[in-house]
Every structure is written in structure tokens, then in C-alpha cells.
Image (cartoon, rainbow, N blue to C red; front, side, top):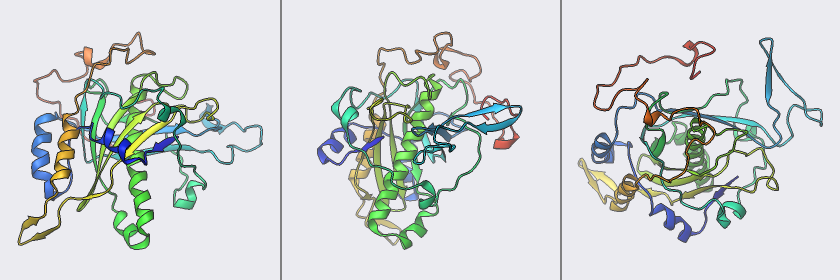
Length: 331
């Protein structure tokens, strides 16, 4: 239920309204990372993982250490066109804040209610997706009790398979690949943040979550802004007409060429857009950000389980996913 904005006017209205942080490739690492290192604190964990259900999915029930899936009235485990999905991605760099970014559209805006979105006509395995058994968890890329719970901007390089895709697919397919990668990276981060604030499959969001995403592939850069309006993706449009909205720019080249160790034809517009992403200011929306967690104090108002501001960060050894006990907080 995501609307891909096709109007250039709508794109510029929100893309030009955005901010930044960065870690990308060597050509503009030095400029952007210097800004990032100043603006961002220590971030030992950047893994984002989120799960969601399509319409008609019947949840698993755990009984006597065995996982069973109830069958629906059609006699199968799932409605034919619906599946449970979980995305896992590690950003190259992210900047988080204590307050959320401003919303780009009101939730009752016509685009959020009536916007058209692409229909999924094929099962995931047609596009190379494989069904796996995994634990349904949600992690938004930071440790528990970190006061900076809201994402301002994340930076991603295209996956290693992209080079092979460029050889096998046409330009239209690659364009869809860029959009899909930007969409899932943005949705996954926003959905995980929403779960941190107490929203889930049953308790839908009461306010929109927004973020900004930058995709980089060698000499190509693309910018996205995203607004998550609902987690109830399992409901039919008649029961939940709310759409999640993605805005995307066209792919831009960072420079023309590199000759004799010198960059020729550097695209200043790309750097300007990155700076706009940096300078979009988080705001106090004047609402309860955790309406379903009234008895739980927000991390930003605590001084437990986290480093006090100004202290040296606590070094945490890397721990593999399956090294955690079964009842661990994260895994």
C-alpha cells in the first residue's frame, strides 16, 4: 500500500523539503563524512529488521515448543495472494534524533487516502525471493534505551548483486530495482521505529513516521523521502484506505569522470540535496508519541541503560544473531 509519486511537482515539494546525513562512496566521502561525524554520535548497531503481514495472513501460534499455523476457511495456510514478509538490512550510515521529523502530508490528505499504488501480480519466488523460516523480530538499528529513536536519514550502497543485474536486465527493470530498494529500506526503518513506540500489527499508528533515504551506486545517487501512515497492511482497502507514501527523485550522476586523479564535472546539486537532508529539523509535534505505552518512560527521559551525554561510549562486543538466548530482548 505504497504510493509512488509520479508528479514532478509533488516530488519537488517534498524532496526539496528534506535533510541529511551520509556515508557513500569515495568520490564524496570526505566532504559528507566530515559533516556526519560532527552531527552524529557513536552508533555501534545499524542493523534494521522489520516484519509485516499482508492481508489475510493467519498468525502462528506456539504450542509445546512446536510452531503451527492455523488454516483459514479456504483450507490453506494462507490466502493465495498474501504472505508474511520480513526485511533485514544494514545501512552504511544512519543519523537518528530524539524527536521525529515533521510529517510531509496530513494523514487525511487525499494522497494518503486515495493515492494509487502498484499491484503485486506475482508471488515473490517469481522474482527470486525464497521462503525461509526465521524469528519474527523488529530491530530499528540501535540498542534498547538509546534516546535517539527516530531516524533522520540513512545511506545505503546498492547490494553486490546490482552489478550483475546491470548486465542482465534492461533500464526499466533497473529503475524498478532502485525504487524497490529505496522503498523497502525506508519502510523497514519506519516500521521498526513504529514498533519501538508501541505500535504493531494490532495497534495502528496514531501519527505518521517519516524518514529520508539516500541510495548510492558508484557514480549514481538517488534520494527518497517516505511517510509511514499505517501498519495495518493486512486489511483490505475498504477497511483501511490509508496509504504509505514514497517520494523519489530521478537518478543523478555524481560526476562526469575522473582524470589524473581529479574529479571532472562534479554535480553540485547532489551535494545540495544531501545538505538539505541534513538540515531538515526534527520537531516536537505536541502529541503523545507513545500512546499505548503510558506506563513506560521514554528512553529520552531516562538515564538508565544508556551512556550519559558526554561520557565515553561503552564498548559492546559484537554478538552473532544466534548467540542470543531464546528469551533475549533483541533476538
